[in-house]
Length: 331
Picture 1 (cartoon, rainbow, N blue to C red):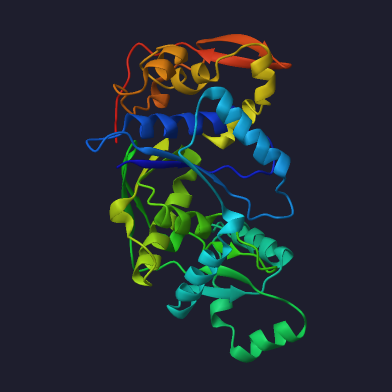
Picture 2: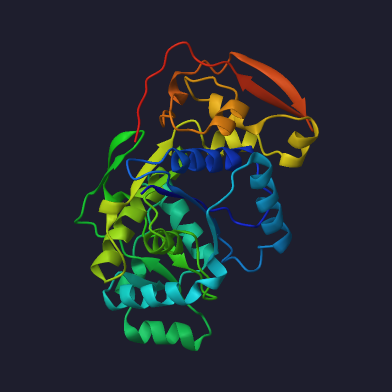
């Protein structure tokens, strides 16, 4: 059975790019597979206690309800911390996480030096060579470590993306990601993988800007499975949406959905037809169900200059016309 998820952080209101991602995952779940309709999960990624707000959790629910994207279940990461601790301990025992003590200023200096030498700003793993006495000295000074996931440089990262096709990354060209802050709080990467494994998520549709995150998380899946935490990558598929990028679409369309409600704009028109060959109006799509829907992405083939516009809340929203031709890929 297909299981998808939408995992917003309640640190602000949703915008068009978020809703587009939610809609794509909802449609894929509702289409289902040979076993029947799938499940669409809402996961509130609220591990950032300082910035998360309950008012934003309420707003997320309201915005999804407005679009008719009713989740089959809801989870909150703040209620799952014991699960992360257990997985973290197993990764620690397996040597796949390690403490690092550099300050933000020290890391920025390293980055600038690398760039000045014409090198990629990849973390140099200096913390791995620190002795036990060196770590003890840092902690005696009151410096708590942040924690990094140790990528396996001998294991080429490869996966079959549902939209982009075969993907390959050299892990030596990626920095070991920080997974836990010095105050003990979690960053996005590891809890997301743990939750996807525990919740049985089979498919994730997300923006193309997440391609390097996906590469890192592929190794996290492998490491967690080897450490005895859940299934491996064989039960999990990714699809990167080339029309959904936080560096492009989201910056341009960071609009409060309440403004769209006031003028009666159908969000799905933006979310679905912007990069699809099928220009059906969203009301028909949502009312009749997505049973004949194919997960297709045609963002690379759209003439981005071919827009009509509408003013919403002081923002000039582009409404692209559907392309006349498209290359179709599917999960």
